[in-house]
Length: 141
Image (cartoon, rainbow, N blue to C red; front, side, top):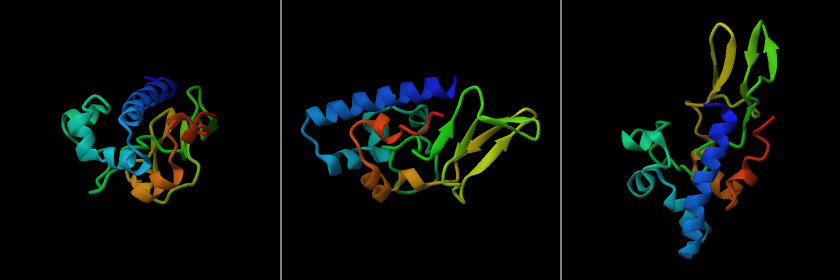
């Protein structure tokens, strides 16, 4: 699956959940609380493929899944640029010290598995928008 297809599908799933929560009358703080990993595994098992195991994408006790993709992630399905004969497909706009790159013979992809930036409560609260696509508007290059 391409980054773009995943991005669109995840945004659509996010909207479905948020729309239901808004319809129930939940406020910003209650919506953020709802998106904690343990609650999402129980109430939204189809939101993430890892929920069926259940396994977290990041080893963090208070993992919040509201920003399951990071607003600092940048991608382009046909590649951003060439680096040493390899095509760079994704990168981190803040060069997180906890991020790294996955490289194979022809491609470079951002590996965010060590970074917790978008999964902390205060970060979600600071960047909160009911529309996930508004938060992620700079991800697609």
